[in-house]
Image 1 (cartoon, helix red, strand yellow):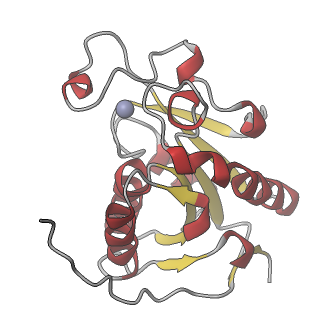
Image 2 (tube, protein in one colour; image 1 turned 180 degrees about the vertical axis):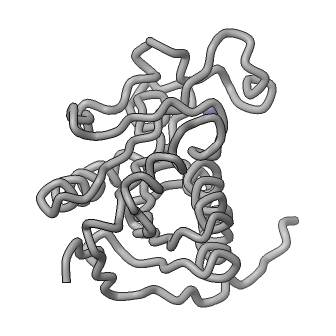
Length: 200
Ligand code: ZN
């Protein structure tokens, strides 16, 4: 019989006002294999986050904040396929970012080989060039690629903001545990998509 444990209260910040000059919106792995029906590693709750993420993207663009997309990218024989089903094979439909969130030329798209969007990508280099200190991180999977990117950002002393309704996970326990680490270990802020304000 599964052990029942209580989920501790999570501090949720109602409104987070951010300077668009020093903040980037990071959209993690909103690709067909994770989000769209028929995807090989579907996260059922991810589809509901698409309109909220689209709203965040619109707001960031309107305010002149940087928008960064990570694109999980694997090739045949990737060792990650011993852990997960085959997913996001480079160049295929499952690898593409969902139509509704299609990046624009002025956005930055980073192909990443592992959970952490800093690993094997120029993300830290770009953020430093841009003078960005705060990352609003959304997308999927909350306790995997969102989480390891948030952790990696926090270890580099970036401020981390996670809108809880704009991330999705396969398991509610994993989601809760991840958000708790964000507010605790990472000293980050958990809010909602509606609570994120680019501007004063
Ligand atoms: Zn992967």
